[in-house]
Amino acid sequence: MDGLRALAFLLVFLFHSGVPNERFFADQPLVRIPLHGLALVAKWGWSGVELFYVLSAFLLTTLLLRERRRYGQASFKLFFTRRALRIWPLYFFAISLFGLVLPGLDLWPIATPDPWRLLGLYSVFLGNFEAVFTGLRIPWAGGTLWTVCMEEQFYLFLGLLLCRTRLAGRSLAIALSLIWVGTISARTFAWCLTDNFVTYHFNTLCHLDSFMAGCLLALALEEGWLRPRARTAWLLAAGMLGATLALIPPVIYQNEPIRMLAYPMLAVGYAALVMAVHLTPGFLANPMLGRVGRLTFGLYVYHYAILESLHNVLLPVFSKLPWEPRWQSAGLALGMFGLGLILTLLTAVLSWVLLEQPFLRLKKRFTRVPSGYVKER
Image (cartoon, rainbow, N blue to C red; front, side, top):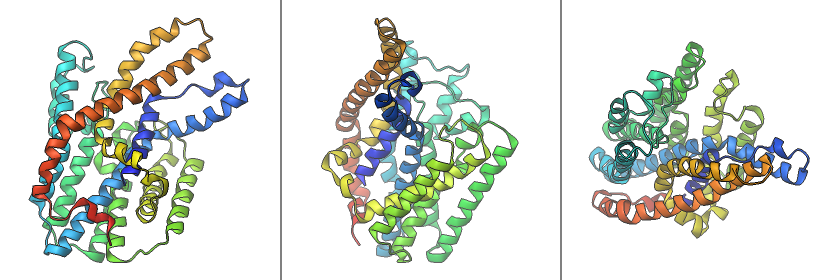
């Protein structure tokens, strides 16, 4: 699954790095046509987060269900300790760096009159609700950390559901399905109340589709209800994701009724993709992608700040070059993508070695079912 994590990160990275405007190259079809395809992928790059959500839900639900089967009950204490060892060291380091050090050095101030409220919410993993409460996205270097808050809230819910209740089999499937219906209803209600996508996109209660799809996929496979062939899974993934691309406007900021369908369609499509890769990983089993996949948390946390910093540095450089505006735009986009990817990879490697790996070694003490066990049947 590490290869799939790498793919999810590349989608998000492309979304934030951007591509040159294809309209600048209307007279050059050899440039315009590839740019059109790349721009479409970039506009859908935000959905890489949905793939992360499906993956996380699928893997964690599988491990907890197998721990239940082995030991009769899954341990909430051990589960949450493992999650804390994986998430908290880098997360709180990033909050300190982006919220205290950089603003303190006047390198990247937080654009809000009350930064301490923002940091307070993020310190208890409720940072995504700052946008819900205010209806605004506050520009700061930790602009992507709201998704980590949402995941941590899901971890708490999943741990309580599978470690503190006796729901299993069909009753668990019904509960998860009802939650999915509930999140669709809550999102629709929020959309009816306001024309601001922030109020539902950043709201965990309105954004559980991908988590529920991952949980249900894990449950269906573990219970033996779903025994698909790899080809069927790949076709389902291609069909659902293709239908999403064809029917739904790609830009997340468009607040149209049909966009309400994007969340469940992406959830089903990415769940099918996870199932297909689980059965036959194909090219995603490439060792290089696997190595990148293991770094994805650090890559995700650092990439936004690095890209925004590069933009501020490179924009005046390319704007002074004696090139046509379209080539200045293309040079800026390529520079941001290439340099940004290299710097993000180097930063993530350092973070992995110096910060994340020492804590990850401790996870073995709190592990009852190894994560590699997910690959076994």
